[in-house]
Image 1 (cartoon, rainbow, N blue to C red):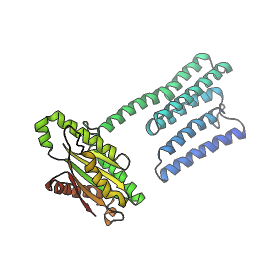
Image 2: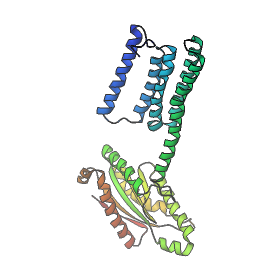
Image 3: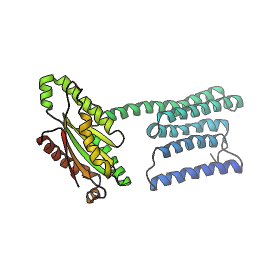
Image 4: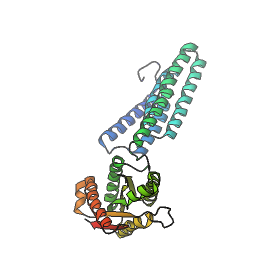
Length: 313
């Protein structure tokens, strides 16, 4: 458009468009060769894309600006896949307002006949607003299904697949803050008796109750998953001084004498102290610690249950 009759005229306008182009190239190179962008980077670039595109298009002739409004579809795609619904709505409001303003300017200018202007506006509107909106709806539905595939349907806790991803993030957090990382395997004591005596519906109620209490207990510093019928796994990152207290808190929290079906659990714990030579294995060390914690859980169960058994690496 710099060389088009409908493009910008004058040194200032052409210089501004060149600056915006160079800024886009700089951001692209930074993202390609630098650290992967995080959400705030995508939000910043979405704002830059909308405001920058609008600032460039107003320098074109009215019809050139109207056709160029199709560039807003790129920011719409960015908002669909990498930014939140709130930013998507803000983007749609801006681009639809800009297209409407350019449509009015074209009708007033009279350089193009009204049917051409209106037809062009409708096509641009569909490309920049309707298509990203439908893509956002579809992506939201796909993402919801993907999240459900990571959850246990009875308790809404993570399943084994979801747990692996979340535990890896905790490993990085522990490494960053020099925390110990503790893997717990938690098994409900004598759960078969609960099912046989009270029925399977009551057994499900007990499982959900344990899941809710574990979620509340580790909502700040850990993740919890249901990995079997009555078995749960938890990982938390915490300073060394509080690890033993947090482990004992699991047994104490899950038992409540006022429950209509009293719950006790056997807890096996494997503590990856920091620093430890085990950390060099990366996130895969969590799986090793899990196997050790599982054997410690069976030791607690053989000792009578309603207790924890811990080992430190």
